[in-house]
Length: 137
Image (tube, rainbow, N blue to C red):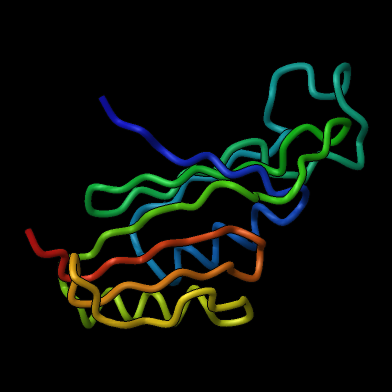
């Protein structure tokens, strides 16, 4: 069984997934609403370029994003965080710093009793992240 975060970003999905791709690497796949069958019958033309689905796959992780349904905007991601564990502590701190750029650090990167490095942040898209590096035990 595999759990995968799926983020709905109200028109910022393409910007976000390109940013995550730059930070995390991996393979990116993106589909727009205009690619769905009967787009013209089901959606307004101004929604053609919105991201219907994007997937970023790297190492053993997968992250998915969408702009979501234009008629049903989502609220901010409070009460949830994407947790990312990277064994190499230096790489983990690089990822943390990159994700924090333009966002807000909630807990600064520091050693903890369960990892050589850990930090929490809210990125520029309003997504909460918990990044661990060199997890012990």
